[in-house]
Amino acid sequence: MKYIRPSLERRFSPRVRVEMFLTQYVRDLAFRALATNLSPTGLLIQKLVEPSIPLSRVVSVEFEIPGTGEIVWARAEPRFDALGEDFQTSGLTFTGMANKHERLLHEFVLNKKFSGRFRPGVRGRI
Image (cartoon, one colour):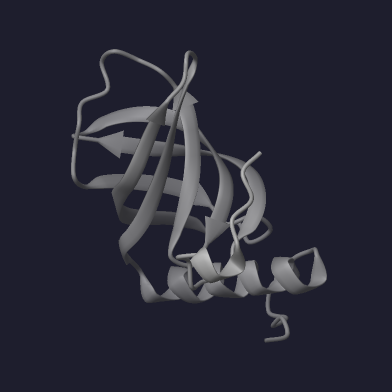
């Protein structure tokens, strides 16, 4: 495993590990994916390698913020894609989402990062 020094870290937002299924839409085609990492500004997903996945500069994602029952629709841009034998890993940056969902997502990440669990309506320490 490669060690990355904190000074080389390019992310400015806190992120947390998650295991949640979501739907990614690429040019109106739906694909199931697993999010493994979530931040207020983006997420890391894995999906099965499929030859029919078209390339696109903008995708949409639909997911539930864990513990809230809120379904988020967001627009995102792929920042990187890595192909393995079975899975494609993609880093997505959010480029558009409802303000309410931005606040809920930020609250979720802070609470989970600092307390290890999420309680809706309870803010994490900064």
